Amino acid sequence: MPYSLTLPDPIAAYFVADTQGPDQVAQCFTPKAVVTDDGHIYTGRDAIRAWKMAADAKYTCTTEPFSLELIEGVHAVKAHVAGNFKGSPLDMKFFFRLERGLIANMEVTV
Image (cartoon, rainbow, N blue to C red; front, side, top):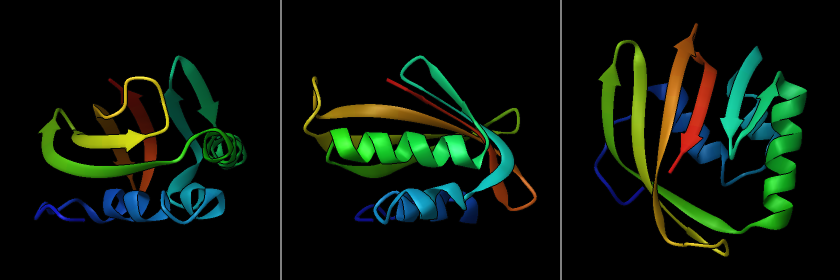
């Protein structure tokens, strides 16, 4: 990552896995984790894997985190996201709740 931002290990692992594929992304989450993205909710690793697979088939993008804030136990990460989607590039927000070294909940917003 070009920014000198120190992210908690599970979040840093997610952003690396995001460049590697659906299986790697799914392993960043707890077995019963929840992802909320674009108005849809995905629960569990299989659903998260399918979400990532569908997104990869539809979009190509890069994500560069540039800020981190801890708000009531939730890690709020802002990232520059650029790719082949409407409105690109965007600064998006990723909200992470961590549990035992993995991501238990992630919400993606604009």
